[in-house]
Figure (tube, rainbow, N blue to C red):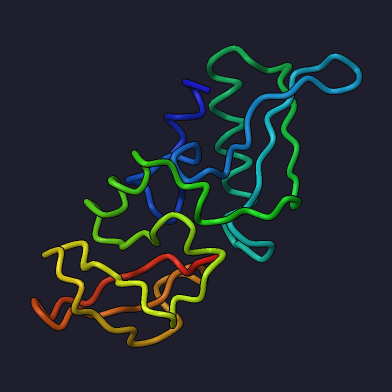
Length: 153
């Protein structure tokens, strides 16, 4: 896991694939072989193959050539899987992570979205479509800065 914690997400290099919860963990298969399970942030994520290749290269470079990689889609990835360290790294990078539990609630119900730059909760969604398919574009009404926000799912 220490090796995988150094593999950056290709779209957000400030966080690792472990920080984002893409790495589900290490498991022993029925044949006794060690496997790394990966779950993409969503099934159509264009970075899925690049993430798998980066994980393979990191494992190989660290001498773990026998560790298999398995991509699993169920249970589906959720923004609740982002670690606390990952949330802080996203915020420092200028991306607002959703609060824990937001994946199971409607954000239109009043959850405040804090600006990752100034911390104000006086923000608004500009577009459901951000810099990548898993993010939406928001703007802070206090500092007027635009920022990405992970879509809750």
